[in-house]
Image (cartoon, helix red, strand yellow):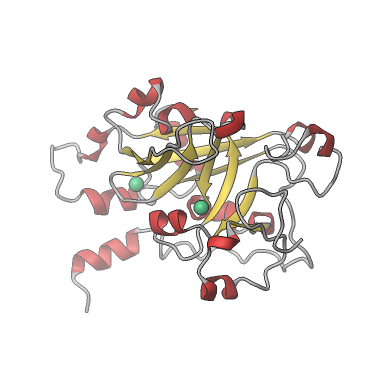
Length: 273
Ligand SMILES: [Zn+2]
Ligand SMILES: [Zn+2]
């Protein structure tokens, strides 16, 4: 018999209450994102960090930054956002997942709403039940948005730039994991990984500045997308990146997935088309 506190926590967390309807049957091929404009929402497990990805209609989505404008009319050229699995060692270790998956998002589509830290109190200055209360109170959808701080552009907050003070006093934490010079790069490499300081959920990855003047991106941890959205078939990763660096048995697990496989980040080079 679990302690009473854990029974309450189990009942109150969305872990148990999330038996939503099954998604539609799998189509015979990977579906890309729908062509009409849409908003993907998500956040950490406790609700302190929430985000929106506002995606314009297909014709307004940029092609992946490694491709030249002459490739824009080729239907095989990937558009952004792009949903993928990453086999790199850094993503596996940082997310603690053997198959980290991402929604590679142009920065201008990404916004954040961050709860201030004082929201941890229960109104009587009591904070001993924080974790349990936060899980009970956090909807894993956008239904609580009217009670939240407004959504603001997220890239500057996540990249430790001038707007990073916007994260001060909130639960968001940012870790700059490297700043070493990479051979062949035209800028110092700085990788920013962000997470909720209250519940620990990994939220996003970004490199800033981007090398070679590539567009600024926010790579969002796919597992943080709200259940009501991630269950759509078009959220299935459409390709695999950094395959040359992957763990053999993990690569075996996903060998039969549909979609191209790329040796590194570039969707212009292929292990398998
Ligand atoms: Zn959290
Ligand atoms: Zn990676």
